[in-house]
Image (cartoon, rainbow, N blue to C red; front, side, top):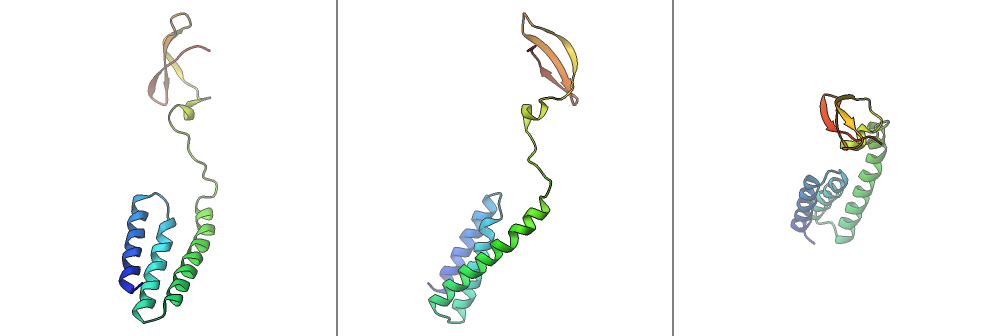
Amino acid sequence: MGYIGWMIFGIILLVAEILTPTFFSLWFSIGSFLAGLAAMFSLGLGWQVLIFASSSTFLVLLSRPIAKKLSKGDSPKKMYIDGMVGSLGRVTVEINPVMGKGMVRIDGEDWRATSA
């Protein structure tokens, strides 16, 4: 595979990185560009593959501790109703257990409520 092939592969991986929310494809894209540089300097295919594999692996392994350190203590935030379970609210419309209707205000938003 010539340097143009490595560069096209790197661009495809870069586009995949842009379309996904992780930084995983980025490291392989960089490895592909480095292998493309090796191909430009007429290194053999074995060297190109070795440069691609080793640089990609090194970048993935290097980024994991950094990512863990940056996200340390951050737990995924609960979304929508799951985030409100156990929250305190103010009843704005009486909760009628027979009719099953009522309103509660939580964090400035009104929500339908039922009695348990």
